Image (cartoon, rainbow, N blue to C red; front, top):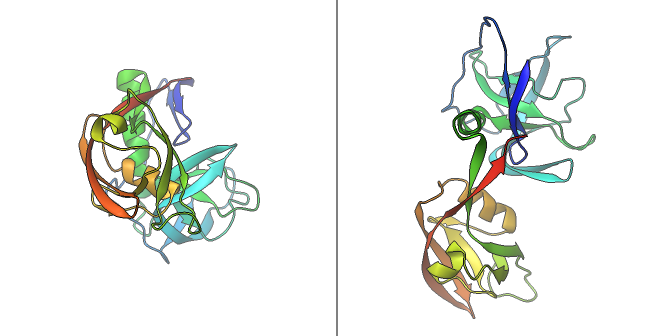
Length: 223
């Protein structure tokens, strides 16, 4: 097998295999709910059963990188292999297991995200991710009237600046999706594509301000 590319934001790799394989069925539209049971298929040993603790839109940390928009399971990966397919009760692949901290609940990359990223690596040589052009952190209740993503800096040449976002703003919604933290901002952005115009609402000195931002693009070079 030959590695074609890798995307660190989703922990998805694309490999080329010579010869025929028998692929598993996938369900790109599957949205596992809290309490659903999934099986992590391990070709070297028994399958590992897990229960979905939090559905898509949570985050995980792998090797210092933040993986956003993952499915969190109820316990660590254990003996299951990173990269193992996660199957729902119908036997369809709903995601791919990824390695997190040893004592952290296991995380699964949703299959719809994995396929989209893989297609971009194959077609473009890299995966494109939406770019807003801000540096932000979680807003702190003791210093801001609103919870959200506090903008510490804005790229003067970036999409957010062109759309009217300013340093000191607190982003409270993106595309109509409420944002209460930096993680939720990233999750909301990933619902959109580069080049798409999104409505962004910020809290500026205690009053709501509506902005319109045309998202840019950052290409993660394939390994």
